[in-house]
Figure 1: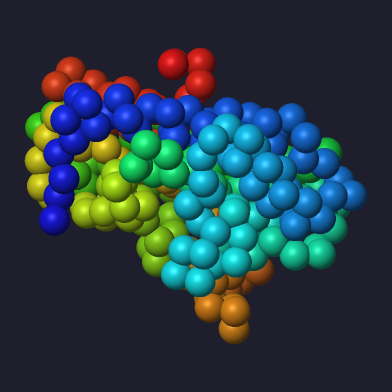
Figure 2: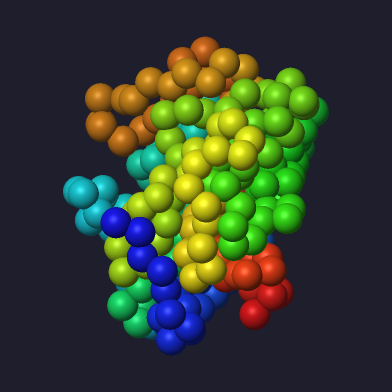
Amino acid sequence: MIFIKSEEEIDLMREPNRIVGECLNFVGERIRAGMTTKEVDELVYNFIKASGAEPSCLGYCGYPASACVSVNEVVVHGIPDDRVLKEGDIVSVDLCAYKNGFHGDGARTFCIGEVSEEKQKLVRVTEECFFKAIEGLKAGTPLYDIGYKVQTHAEANGFSVIRAYTGHAIGREMHEDPMVPNFGRKGTGLRLRAGMVLCIEPMIAAGDWRVEVAPDGWTAYMRDGRPAAHYENTLVIREDGVEILTLPAQQ
């Protein structure tokens, strides 16, 4: 079922999404070589709690942490543990906050020290894919235009798009309909409506797009062992454009 949010509901969603955006900035300023992924998760947990919110991921379907911390070939849902971050790693941090009865969601991929040219390009292009996807996005846009733009930009840069995981709508539940693929045929899919709140999250691979899931049931890694990156924001569809809720500079 697709939920169209009222302006009152969107106002309630601003705070958890602001917290998500500020938390991602907070982590980005502190993440470094020598930290464990568990220490990254602790940064997230403490920031969200200090902001008066709850970490939505913690306990979600049994997930054991407040953030997904995914290193190099792990594209999403990496469980924080004692793995030590090293110079040259790229690390996706995906987190959600719950406050006012609503969720916020966002992700960034961070470079640890000096990384390879391929990884630098991958992280940059993944972020660009998000902003390409929202060019001209507004009420009335066909849903799969989003994925078409992500796929076109990723493949033009020699990368591939993850098929197994998608973006999604968000609200009182962390994941709501519709799902938002990062690939698709232009001009197809349902027409977006003003008041829809979506998480658009390009997940881009340096090599082949196929993934495997580890025995823990969560960690999704690239089958070919090459790196992947992830970038996500929560936004509101408006009649004449979009309003991004997880970029603090826009608040």
